[in-house]
Image (cartoon, rainbow, N blue to C red; front, side, top):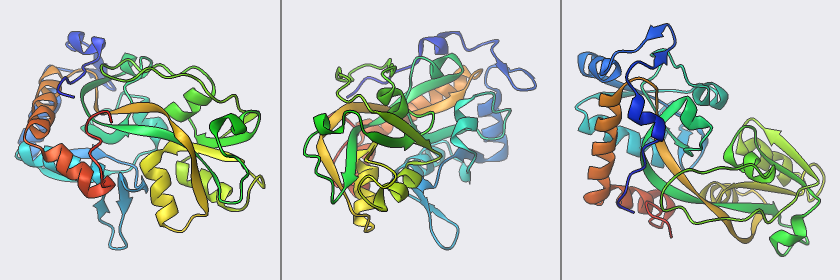
Length: 277
């Protein structure tokens, strides 16, 4: 994958509104350069993308990508952890500069955020309890399935997922759940599924690396079937700074060209998912 996707809305960045008033072109990038700090939003409940160590520091694939982004901007990095719903609502008002949080550039989100650079693609898969009799995704029809609220996996379960990005394979809706149960994070869904097969949930849909991380951590889960869609994940920025968008796109492309994204993917996932596999 050598083409970086920019939302259609990014072509008309100038004059769009941030919280508190009109944004000036270059405002956020100017602030980063003046303060010497890039402030990045992340969610530490999603290893191996992002997690927090006992000493309070952050680690993971998203963390390493964000840290490299800041380094190539000549800035230090600071992380903040707002709720996902707040990040995806846009109008950040300068509380953070970018989101390196494995966000999918959906058509709806592109109305309030800009997506200057896709940096990897993750397979979306279903997981069941180890005691489940399910052998394929067909066995999940009519069951209670958990997922994160307001995320692409919920959209998939509800049959209204729209991914407007280049080089993403077409997908079909292969499961019709009997009930969709949403959670603040995927980890909360895994916690209910681990209690027992069918006790609270019959299955969970999440990113395959996130499922595998839960299994590696001792959760009694297993993956069912093949991935149901491939999710492009992009750096996100608030509306209003074409210069910041261009700089982020330039750096991510540079990281792709020099192999940095591939190396970081191999480090955290054991496979290169900086391109569609």
